[in-house]
Length: 179
Image (cartoon, rainbow, N blue to C red; front, side, top):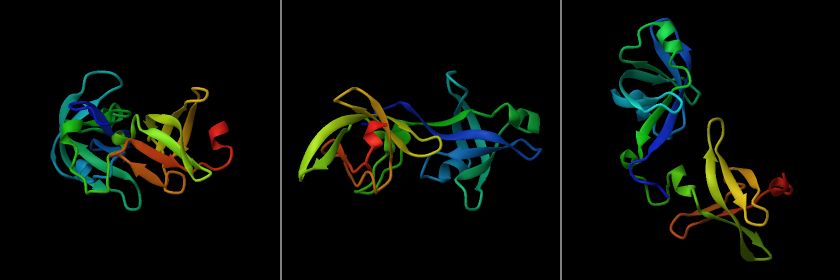
């Protein structure tokens, strides 16, 4: 479920690039235009309030999920170095509209987690968080022991997402829920 008017992280500044103040951004978004199209963006350092900055230009590094972007007022390598670990944010009310079968990762929060056992769906937990700095992982709290487990969000393990009925079905490999 997406809470209106909340901030979500769509990118992370990982390092500087070159000597003219460009920064390297790791995308946490499926929407490349967030790092390519000039316009206003929001940056946040740790838990400070977000601040507005203008994105002047950007390009995607071939074969990677990283972008090189130029931000207004960041003109030296030293200044770009200080931008490392800043988050690029958007408001949830600015999320793009999706096609019928698509969903935003945030919509997975609080969904029930079910497994198929003996041709019956059994509810085993709920999605309590998302980890997506390096990979898309669902953090699931198991009802039986309140233990948190990390489930890779891949089709082989999460074959079904039903946003309308508030659940996902997982097919975990043996031992994954016992880790």
